[in-house]
Length: 156
Image (tube, rainbow, N blue to C red):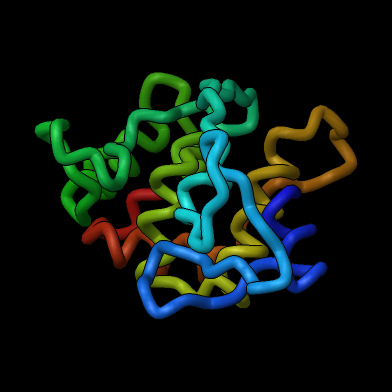
């Protein structure tokens, strides 16, 4: 908030060094108790804790997480196939297995995020909804496309 206020008041200007702002000559900025004509962009950052979020909507959460170099499993078509092949086994439905945020994120590499993923996500939400009037079934075409990406033969 402080940085945006200073920009609005034309106190800060773009400087020649990336990562630093220049203080307008008509103003004085005090940094660490001393006047300064440049301010590091890091000066305006606020560290906040990251809190794990649990959701009943994303029930499966077994698909490998993206950007985890320390993990021995990585998102791949093989992992997608492994997860979706559990469909109709041990009580899992195709929609249950699709209700994994990391899996949906992986699918965004293959499906259009503007046209394909919204109906898939809507079907997941409706599938989780306790209102029995809503049908949480996904269009067969999407099921076929997702199964094809995973290398499954109509195993949904």
